[in-house]
Length: 367
Figure 1 (cartoon, helix red, strand yellow):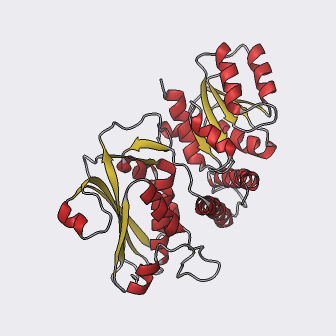
Figure 2 (figure 1 turned 45 degrees about the vertical axis):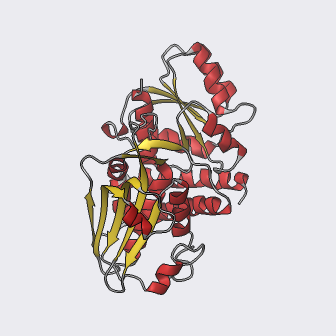
Figure 3 (figure 1 turned 90 degrees about the horizontal axis):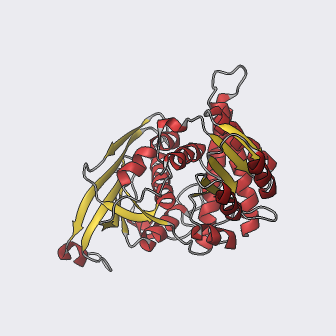
């Protein structure tokens, strides 16, 4: 899949996810086919995940590393996890109170957790329990000696346990192979666990599976401990007052439907919005506007002017302007490489709108 196709596909998914989430905010609306809308939203999120997996599989993605606390990430994912599971599956989260920090790509570890939760769900058609646990761990020489290539030291453990059907030794031996799946045709790609394995390895960690037929399954992930404090620039997933606000936001997005969808979502959360489709229009508005603009939310790749170039120009006349950059290009495109080098917070399309709203709020609240 080329970066241009991925860009267009991600923009389409942004529109679908955004509009279905807007509709789901009003489930009592007359004649609203709530269940159908929820199915559309879930399908769009699955398509988004598949796109990212295919791009990751085609070549190694550069990781956007930051220091995080896994407890915070999991807590912020609570709503998404509940959507992934069915009502007959109980979710338990057990977090180490003084959990050490790790340095990983937040978006990638979220994909790993969601993938493991979805796999666990499929092994429990009649219901069951899903337990997500974190703990500080020390892998000593004795433990490491029984595992090839393990470096002894301090790690943070993430365990995902289900009470499902379990696996045979044959299935376990092929579990992380690319395109291997036990699901029916059309039900899975076989890329989820292979990309999870590659990401964990890239992060310097380890992932192992413990399972017996009829006895459920536990995946244990060990990520290297880091002494650094949590990177406050890693704003994704922070939930501040449900993302609501009253500030003025300038949205710059050349795709009309994406722009309309983002405007609807931000307006619903109380923000005052001005929206344009080009950097030139944005500069003109800022040159003549009397009221302050608090945040620039801009697409990265637009005709004639990149989003970060626009931000640099606007901040010369509005030094207090906060900036959030978005893009639908793949993680391996030149445009994405450019995004990794800019100094502004960045979120890739298609984004979960909870994450966008929370990130907008976090950027506005940042000093």
